[in-house]
Length: 456
Image (cartoon, rainbow, N blue to C red; front, side, top):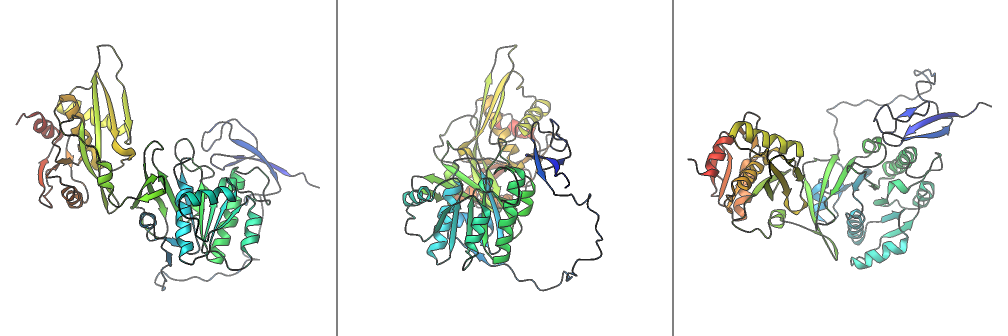
């Protein structure tokens, strides 16, 4: 009898090696190779006649009629917005987020809403007992919803149970890292177990027409734990973001085969669960005081939704010889370094002997390049100790040459600012006023510095 072949699988990226080594050659992580014993043979090791033994598949053209997939609206508008209209039948969705961010709470609320509409919903928890889920549902006021609960970690037991009778319209697995498949050796949470368990559950959802939702853990850098192939296997990947110390949460679609990835859902964590935030701009601009230096309002854009956020900057002068510090929360630290370099090289401002702190209020994370001008205005205000007018917003992309470049959807940003009572805007030179807003256009960053410092 042939000895079972040994292979070593990286628990970070899923790559396979024939012998153990300290560092994975693909992802460069240390001590992540775990031995797996099995008779599996890679396709490159097996010799098959690929032209026989298979079945012919039907080929269709691009011009064939296609029926749009039906969606199940959850009734939670922010969740439906992020997903493009709701859950899709026979689809798989992966949602990830930090521990305690509210993933289970959000899915329990969505499951209860669908159950109240007459849909069969099954919620399987591998981390909590069924009674714990029931107690949480009662705290959230969802105790009357007919959601079928189970506490299980075996995918065989789950699929055997669900195979009896009508398949559920929505199946929630919390979480995929706790699932175990008896077809693969290894502990739950390993790359092989996560991949095999997800594959079995996704096959069931595709064949029976259920909408599958998998909850995934995240690593220290915020990426979903487990093999990267897991994100390729599912149809939709959602990221639930936010700081646990803050009240607000943002649901963002990273991948969506049935819609766009340009929408977000905003929630507020309260004692009664997650509540929808219909007007995020008003939420992120609360408690603003007039006359404070280093504070600028930026009209960010998330898909088709403008969101006004407050950018705060603090500049502290140090004694000669001290090493200045740069700290950023909610923005790219490399982009801050670029803005500081342009301000020094093109505008003559000196930050070399100053500590710089930048913060996006409310725990919001800005990725829009149009925030460059707002960040620069906040830094200039903090350095010169001259406040930005409280009724003004700023937006625009800054080039290394100091040029202020136009950005997309400027009219939409201005309309949202006017709706919340802002009267002025600082932006690129070609920007036209909208909604009664007065726009001060700047071709270069130096022109903005002269404007804010009163040089002309």
